[in-house]
Length: 336
Image (cartoon, rainbow, N blue to C red):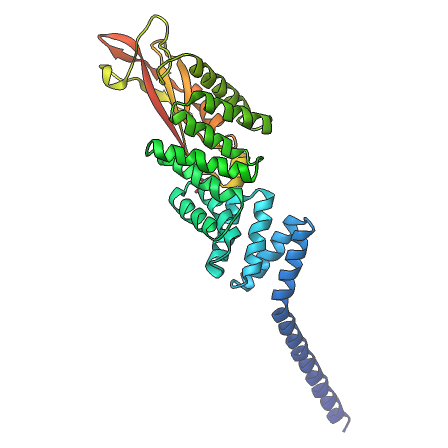
């Protein structure tokens, strides 16, 4: 009888434990079902309180469980965007556009991420759709301006770049990167005074920019060109003729070409693309007359110039003698 009671108590205890586990599991499942919208609200609240990093972490958990939550994707994109992680904001804004095609703000911010990521055609399409939907931010106009500049299709595209850079600056006078785009569009049109003025405005807004010294030198060169009629290729080295590659019998031979490194700021922004420089490989083995003809922001242009100055080469030859030769240098930046 005693053993029977013990067995009965053991069975009842096991049943109690089992029922407790079932009830606990049911409550956990129910809580997880409620977690999605509750956590989205928490993420939005953290964002509005300026707790951007915490907001991003919460919202990352939400979209992992609820990939159709457009609010969570949108505020995740905003949190990353406001932190300066523009490249990391690209995917969230893409998801918002998929879930809410009429979100003008998401389209505008996505266009900015796309142009920084060197996807000009997608950037233009996204930016134009944002404007058509009534967006009133600088990002969409900047994306069109920069994409038009990079097209290198001639005068009309450079004029379009200037027009949209001005539109971006009218909306947000402190959207200073548009001034770099505007300057290079004027430069391509050989409007040197206007190009120099845009760079000077940029430096007034961003005196501590990573490329500030580069832009000061470039602005000085542009101002000089505005005063003196001079070929775009620059003056020849005194006492020598500077030749084009097709004019030499043997081109300069590069035996050391260091590559520039990404700046941390450019990585944060998700910047990709190409910096194009023009230089003279002189007859005495020096790099001279370095000029920027296509730029990237956030320190990448300066990094390219620094790398170019470290190039080592054997001079070009003509009629058995070393000569100076113009050359174009391209530095490609890709995050993946």
